[in-house]
Amino acid sequence: MLPIKLTETFTQFVDSEKSSALLLLGCTIFSLIVANSAMGGAYANFWHLPIAGMGLQHWINDGLMAVFFLLIGLELEREIYSGELSSLRNALLPIFAALGGMLVPAAIHFAFNMGTPTQAGVGIPMATDIAFALGVLAILGSRVPLSLKVFVVAFAVIDDLGAIIVIATLYTAKVSTLYLAAAATVWVLMFIANRWLRWMHMAPYLVGGALLWWLMLKSGVHATLAGVLLAFAIPYSARSDDETSPSHRLEHYLHKPVAFLVLPLFALANTGVVIGSDWTAGLAQDNSLGILAGLVLGKPLGVVAFCWLAIVTGVASLPDGLRWSHLAGAGMLGGIGFTMAIFIGSLAFAGDPVSIDASKLAVFVASLMAGAIGYAWLRWVAPPSP
Image (cartoon, rainbow, N blue to C red; front, side):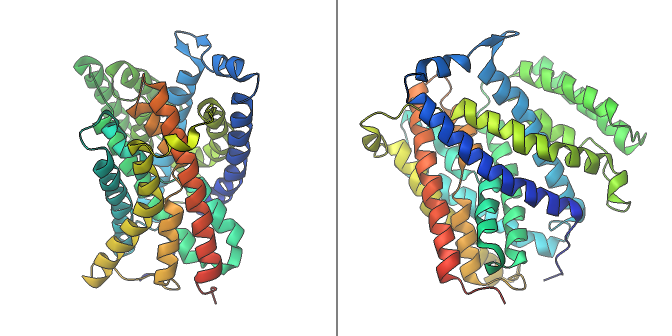
């Protein structure tokens, strides 16, 4: 295993994600309380206020979340060029972990819902919320080794990439070839400006990114994917000082707005679920069971099984300072789906508010269980880090 390379950007990213987890939790609790109070109706109506042809919630989910996906793309680019994923040997274990953490939960959900309308929710338990996973690791402090935090970030970022692919392939209905071709043209022009013309000013890319977002919105492919595409069109140089890279500077600028504005607004707009007296019965439905079992059981099983396969076959090796108990704990924390799971659930059951709310409730319960179990495992079962 090659030595772990930590950058200032990585440290800032981890710090912002830890703080964001606490704020996200507070916003979710607030949203649930208000939604189930006498102000619940007014609260729900507020998020559907029409603004420039779209509801407020729609602007948040399709607009602001594109900024979140832009940050994910920038993080992925950094990891590929100069981070944990820059070495194939280092990258293979988190890649296998992410694959197992996506495929096994999806298979479990599919087994519960095959051939039913809720089969569309197969992508929900594939997601991992980096903010909450790192928040739990932050509470554990020095008990967990630094290599575990790096591993969790690496496999969660790859997991997000998998979620992006799922959104693009499973949750895109009608596609306008004309708008999609126009979006591809804009992206190619930005790519040329980056790789061949070496334009290092950020403004042309941000303007092009805004146009790309609008064209993607019109194309039928989810507009948030424009954020990821934009990330890989912005110049990045692993050889130069981080401060000179437009990609690094934009990632630095976006950390706090995404952590303390975009994700909290998403939580406020999407977690106001009305909890009825029969909410526990709803958790026994096939879709909810698939989400619960997928996140709580499927994630750790998939992560550990695929890591074992990679190590036994000699494809990858166990990082220095990590034990199998640490990897199991990482898999448990991977079951905290939250942001991405809620987002995918809203896409999977668009136009079916009952299924959306049932999915959100299952995600809440599963994420709480996964976080608690993962914390307990790493706190009391895994040996303390030396």
